[in-house]
Length: 153
Picture 1: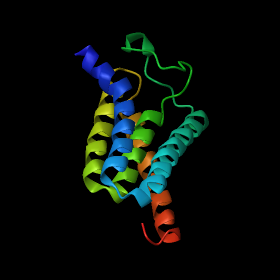
Picture 2 (picture 1 turned 60 degrees about the vertical axis):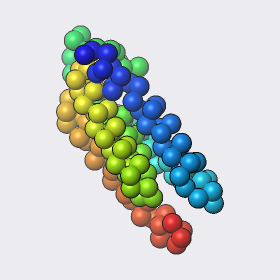
Picture 3 (picture 1 turned 30 degrees about the horizontal axis):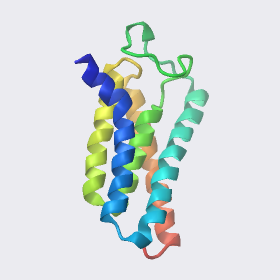
């Protein structure tokens, strides 16, 4: 069971990113490849960095890591909001804006990632919810702006 939790908490984020890129290159028109890849790269990473900024501003501590299944890269970092959840939900929301089926798959993977990180003991559940909301808001804002700037989404 611990291996499944670790898989969801650590590895699933990479599988989701590879799935998103693969889906763009195999299912979308070639003329949209660059635009979609740029958005699928920049929006989740912007969400990750926004989460990092907010963690340092809010300074809400992580759970006690003595019982965690693994230690985060930066053990001294704070927990709210979760950068992994922000990244995954931003990736899912961005993909959903131009590929509904793949977006739904990524939302499911994002939920499993969040659950895995909470069960692994490196985040509280509200860290995950905070990251999910942050990622969704940033993605929705940027996608809306891009749709208005680029008329032919």
